[in-house]
Amino acid sequence: KFVELKTKNIDCVWNGMTITEEALKNSSVSVPYVKNAQVVVMKADKIAEYPDVESMKDLVFVVEQGSAGKDAAEAAGLNYTEVKYQSDALLEVKSGAADACVIDITMANNMTGEGTSYAELGCSLELSTEEYGISFRKGSDVTAKVNDIIAELKADGTLQALAEKYELTLA
Image 1 (tube, rainbow, N blue to C red):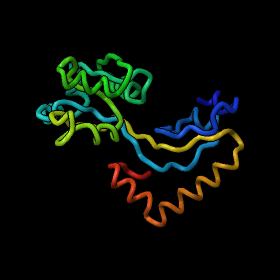
Image 2: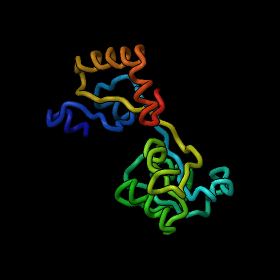
Image 3: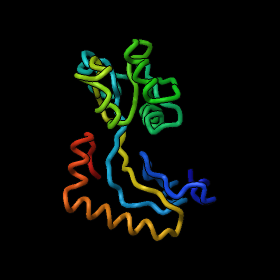
């Protein structure tokens, strides 16, 4: 994605763009606007049996390949296999092929629990946290303008209203 920015194939990286050292080194990054976390999702009736990472060491996890969830599972020393998408990870847990998965909290909040296709699944532990920003080419003057807009949207309550509507946590 940073090569794409540099070669002007794209103008920004936005959707779920985690602010990392790599992003800061290779692009101009906005202020953080949303907090994200990597959470454990499992059958809701099993959550109480696994209060911490140590108690989950013998479980079979599934994670999205190349994702922050994979990094969090690896850092926690969990036994995992990779699938192509986070939605595939949820299917694996629902079907019983895996005990749990590690996915973004935003997806977990929107896809699990009562009224969803994954009503029997729930969020357990938060393994890691991160912040989302918007990435532009190095030296871009757009970053400062976007930062001003983010500040305005926070000040007038627009970002908070959107966060509540879409079950997000502001940074």
